[in-house]
Image 1: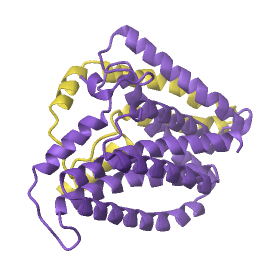
Image 2 (image 1 turned 60 degrees about the horizontal axis):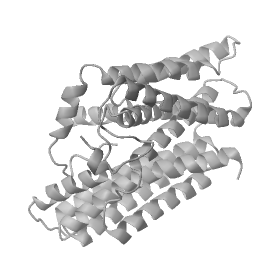
Image 3 (image 1 turned 45 degrees about the vertical axis):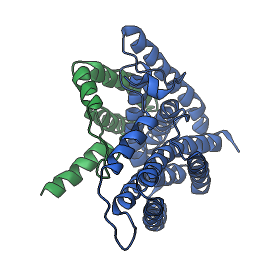
Amino acid sequence: MNAGASALFLAVFLACAVEAVEATTIVLAAGTARDWRSAGTGTFAALAVLAVIVAVLGPAVSYIPLRGLRVVVGALLLVFGLQWLRKAILRASGHKALHDEDKIYREQIAAAAGQQARSSLLAPDWYGFVLSFKGVLLEGLEVVFIVLTFGSNAKNIGLAAIAAGAAVVIIAATGFAVKAPLARVPENTLKFVVGIMLTSFGVFWGGEGAGANWPGSDAALLVIIPAIALFGLGLTALLRRAGGGSGGSAVAQVPAAQATP
Amino acid sequence: MSKLRAFGAFWYDFVIGDDWLVAVGVVIGLAGTYGLNRAGVTAWWLLPLLLLLLLPASLRRAISAPLLPRRRREQHRPPASPHTPPAN
């Protein structure tokens, strides 16, 4: 695997792992607090909807001219990447509460347990069905978006799909094996890395789509990614020194439940 | 009408997010890169330069005045329901 393909695999794998952690937390909460059969039905229903979306969008993407696709996708990746990076820097420097899967799981459990049971043809517990359906569909849409945009831009949808599949299977299997939220996954650190990757690919593809010729072509990514990482870490250090809070560090992650203000 | 507004709000939140300045900056950067390229000027440096300005500016906006009220609101956020998926 060359450097470009490795960067593509890593970016898609990490981004999809983050989405999979969030979806797994929601399904686990729906299953634990409500009904496992309904949570399972909701998950499979969402996966079926996602399969239809992929079947429709997948071939459509291949008809869009690559240059136009790179501008649009580059712009979206830059906006998303900068948002992720901004939040990650704020979390790492203590200006924003760390993302806490344990806390989200407890909130979901409390909310789910308080709802009255209502059955339907599809599921014995409608609330559990809807909870897991919406969670898997929303996070799954982000996975689909990541695979199609990264894969089509790099002309390697197959590799992007393998990376996404590997991330989803590993995270979901781990979550259901331990039947607990994946609080030990260093999610805040992952989000920092994903923010760097999205921003880097956004700069590269956005620039190429707008007509820029990068020195060294694809090898420019090997400079852009570490440069943005160093810039992000530098800004984190600056903000931390300027005085933040006790939000925690995305680089040396502490147990999120303790660090959340 | 309220459904239409909610639909618009969802897409605004999904694409633009917390800080519109970032989205506007990205559009300006891409348009500038295209313009420089059309004029025959080397343009690859524009987006990295923009990033150097945009990210600190956005962080500065985030940690200025509204920070404390926003953190308090986060702490008192009502429990999630199927209608409120958790944020990133």
